[in-house]
Image (tube, rainbow, N blue to C red; front, side, top):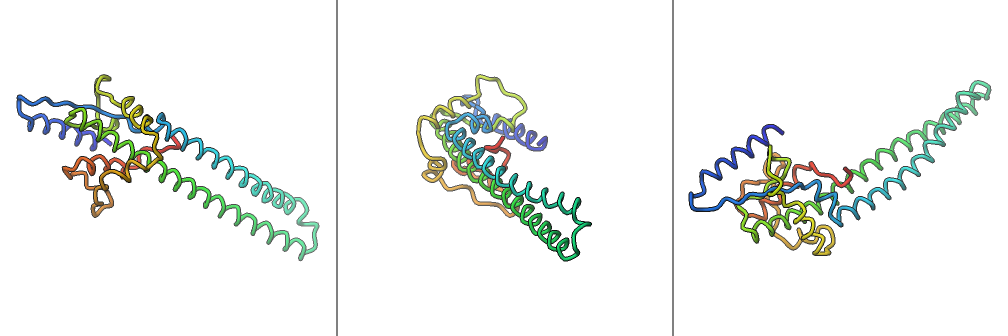
Length: 215
């Protein structure tokens, strides 16, 4: 994180030196996590994810209760049972425990994947909105809040981004599908944010996977 902030400062200093004395440097920043939490698409997605979490928890709770009941029965009555009956009960307990553990892992994977998919779709939309606002507003650069050490509140355009996105009334991910293609991945799996194309530069944020709809 410190390395990223140092790089951000170097970029800003280099930018200031590169712009001529007669040109206006207009900077802004956006809190992507707050925009994700407060935009209508983010609120809907979070509610849907929470509903799915509750549904999964109910199913897992029932399975866990079955496993616990079998475990208690085996501990309390197992020694009094005939060997074959005790073995059958032990096998049933082991099978249900394995099923529960596998279902628990599958549920975690499902929720994590859903979180990443929905978060990615909305964040890419937000990046498109940020790019449009940046171009229309004549901004030299719009940075993500987490990448800067300090900024005056007056250059925070998060509320403007949220209002603009909500006003479009689009399905999550629709803006990104209509916009510029994402930057190609580099050898280490990260986006090539060095491109001068504004669409590709804006999309590089999604590869960092810091934001999440479940936060």
